[in-house]
Length: 382
Figure 1 (cartoon, rainbow, N blue to C red):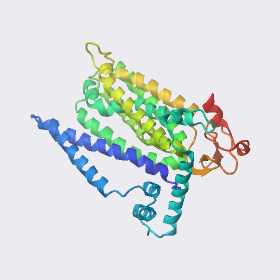
Figure 2: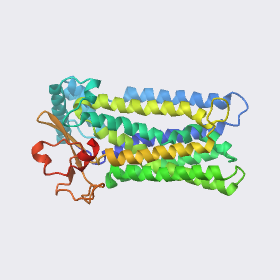
Figure 3: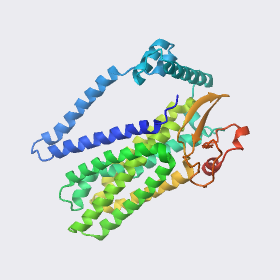
Figure 4: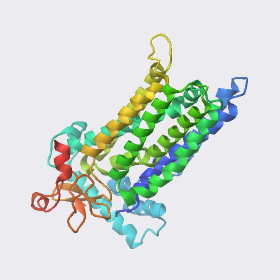
């Protein structure tokens, strides 16, 4: 059973992350002036409290209905699903959804166990392309430079001559939280690909402007510093409403059932790998001193260039995958991607067939493929 708000639901994951960042910023600001070790012990101690809440929540969390179906515990699966969507276990909607889960699981069993190598095999439904798309979109999300602001923003703002860098950090976190909401609202209305393109273009412009302003003014130029902060905030707004949540939406929708878990794990591993790499390398890029590049604000030229890379990657390799339906048939899992309301493919501008579908990854049977636009398949295989 397909939820037409799935993009917004998945985006809620990123929204929760932004709320956590905001709370961390507030705590750090509250303890920064303490003269004792309490200034760092309190923030760390509070992390144990959240870990305890998570542990209790995991105890109360119902088991996955799919896992219960896999173990042939149908009644337990009905009760678990009933708890999740607030309907009686014998409700027709519950039974229908369990049947869909059962059919999908049986189809997955027929396909057999998959390996990580299967994620990179050449196939008619472009498994390798989809795996690489998931890996690279998560890498590009980190390479936008967003975590430079949230990891090192306080030091960066201080070195740029801003008097209260902690307060500016809280302001950027507030923008991050509230600008994620337009992304959650717009992901189903404007499409994933269009928002990624707009976000990459907006971030690219803002980051180049931050770099240009930063290298042309002195740290004592109050007006210039306000301009720098303004463009940093606009850049965060673009990220929060586009690449922040939608990268997760894309990776949740493009993989077929037989490799979904492993391909998703590769995408998430890519995210954390680049998160670590940027967090580790940034001090050497920004700071002045031995064995450091001393780029300071010029590092935004790098982030602007990577955002240009995000734009090119999205334009050439990311199809519109909104409103994704997964179902088994003829030993394949088909992904039908509905277009935007106007029925237009963004790159070509050609109207789609009346059903408003696009053959995003070349998944349709050959008999149907000739009736549907192939712009995405052609673009991604060149």
